[in-house]
Length: 189
Image 1 (tube, rainbow, N blue to C red):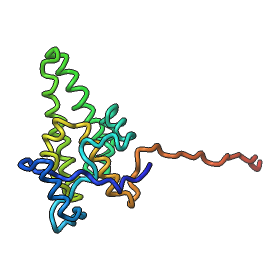
Image 2 (cartoon, rainbow, N blue to C red; image 1 turned 60 degrees about the vertical axis):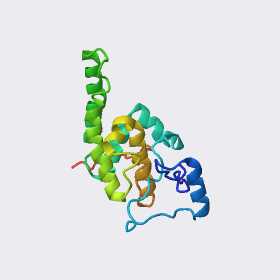
Image 3 (spheres, rainbow, N blue to C red; image 1 turned 135 degrees about the horizontal axis):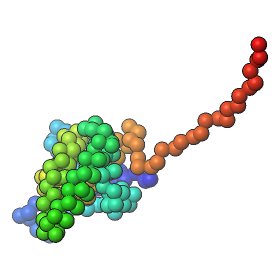
């Protein structure tokens, strides 16, 4: 898989400023450089909606988000892979299904609060570990409205920041068989 170190997220435009005003400001200034921890929080290496930049994590995050969430939690040291994966599965799939069936689909979005409460703690841990901005909004709101995109963004960030430390990618482990063993006839007494 290619490294996405050349990706630069789009510039932040404050709410009170239009796109044309920000273009004038950006033309007159030098491009922003990477901030260090002294200057304050740094930007995420990819945007919340940049899921299609990494199709592997995008597909896994869409069809099996509990697996990707478990990988993120395992890296952060906040839990085991299976524990986090199963907790996410219970909160995401089972609670949504039961709530949808019991209310005939009227409160389908309400159980999202449970998984957002659980997941925003991991996002907060990731932000504090890498000194990242709380963007695009608060951790809870990001996970409540864009949960699948958020866990994909967190995975991309972990992979980008730990590229040199040998972070295990989503690829499957390579298993090699032991050499062929034979039994030699034993000595009879």
